[in-house]
View 1 (cartoon, rainbow, N blue to C red):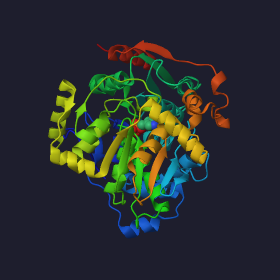
View 2 (spheres, rainbow, N blue to C red):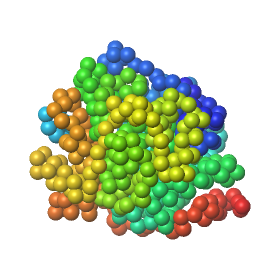
View 3 (cartoon, helix red, strand yellow):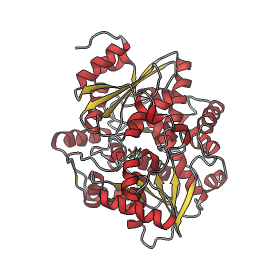
Length: 468
Ligand SMILES: *Cc1c(COP(=O)(O)O)cnc(C)c1O
């Protein structure tokens, strides 16, 4: 399998180089040159496999040009053995045709672990073979950072620098990043928003001299390896609910568009998905786009679901690439226009094509709290605010559809104690393995929201010398 950039002018890569590269050198994102395709018989043959065995079979066509199937099976088995539920991604029934998929049984109790735990091990494997080191530089709106840190802590060939918006992540989220006592981990509190953090990361990746000297690599969802790992749980849930002999649909709380894009990939591989419901909070650029075609930037406002406080969703570019018939230069032109004017233009027929699969809705904080209360009263499930946005969107848009729809529970409710208390009047306890968190010593550096300041700090920590 080869990978191509959405902007059409970076070199094609094989999986190992792709893994280490992250953002393409033309500023684009990598996608597979073609989609591996599974027949009905192929899907049926995957039913009943364990999560790890299913992951190996689904990932093989994407990685096996550079990693042997035997090594892959070994890496995947070790990855998911560390999760704390034997089903890895268990399903719970909420109503006749609606389900909740729990994606919080990894070490940092958010769904990012499902991809990042694998990514850390893939890095180890590929770097050892190539005799290289990398520096992971990432921006987080809360959950990616801790998941990346957990995935890479104490690994020999990796340094990790994580930028998060100072004062805009929950205490638990921050502590999960700042209390890890590993020499190769730095948490940086940026005086700005998540979009500022993401822009800084993009700017530093575009600084090719610095990028090469620091061997920069990405662990956020611009890294294709993360998307591909997320395909697995969509297939796992769908097969249990009767796919491929039945359509199975999903409701996904969406920020950077990585998670829901993985569902789109599963569909491109032939999984019968009819509808993907995108749930957003008040930062609703995606909802405005999928309902009216208007993609225009507004300011980021804090909400009860901080991991979705995002306006510019990086992974949307991957969908745009397909909507523009994989015309890279055209993608580059439209993204440049979007950057310059704050508005993305898409023709009506292309928008219609997107709307056949995607629908979207926005939940205010009040709607989110109401959903948390309603679901708790009806089913006893304690939802975190992000999961509540998934369930609330499902309940709003599923209608009388008899195809099962699965809402993704992307974080454990103990990760957002203030919101849970506000909704239900009590807090969900942290799982036992995180009991130490609130007393452990914190370690972080506060820096201004300026790319140069971050670059100088990273250079000094890596002892690279000065960059002009
Ligand atoms: C990251 C995250 C999201 C958003 O996922 P994207 O892939 O960025 O769309 C939603 N909920 C939680 C809990 C998250 O950690």
